[in-house]
Each structure stands twice: as structure tokens, then as C-alpha cells.
Picture (cartoon, rainbow, N blue to C red):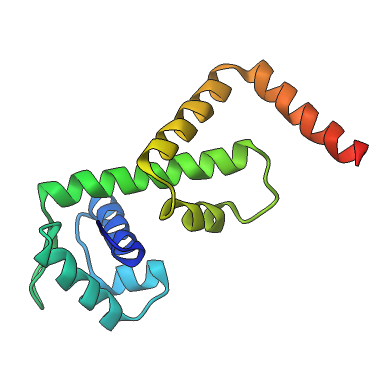
Length: 140
């Protein structure tokens, strides 16, 4: 099991690999607002665990395991951002999803994904929920 910080490093490495095809320590550090030495330490651990291939001053590459896990991490983040947005939470959606993603079980994530899909496919029910939220605030 990966720690939250290792998940973050792998998630960003995956995003960079999809978007830029080259994973650079500097880019991961900037995306996560952490120091480059912290990224190097994380990449070394991910290398030892078989998620990527990292050697100093060499190209960083994701392994198949790293690609699969990275894809999952990116999707998990998207699902949670969609969920927070859908329920109308008055917060920083990106930060809220980030706070949630490391502490929810896969089962809970899958249930949230189903709920988001259900609301997306049943717009009238989503509108009823939003109406209920507004009425609940007015009643209190």
C-alpha cells in the first residue's frame, strides 16, 4: 500500500507521462508544491516498489504497474471532484477531493462513482436533490 505522498508522486508522474511524455523531477515538484529532494526520495521508493524506473540523470519511465495504478489514482481524483461538485459543497473542490482520496476505501470510491453516474444519468433526480438542499437551508 502506498502512502498518500507516494500516491501523489505517482499520480503526477502518470499525468505528466500522459500529457508530456517526459517525467521531470522539477515538474512533479512544481505540481505538488514540494521540494525536488522530496520528489527524488519518493521516486526512489516508487522505483524500489516497481511502479517506475528511476535512475539519477536518466529518463523516468512508468512500469505497467505504475501506469495502471497511476490511471486509477487520476480516475479516483476525478470521481471525487465530480462528487464534491455534484453535491454542491461550498469548498475548494480540488483540495477537498485531495483530502478525501487517500482515506476512502476502494469500495467507497466505487459507490461514489455509481452515485455520480446515477445523478448524471438522472438529471431530474439531481435537480430534486439540489432543490432539497436549498429548502433545507431555508428551513433552518
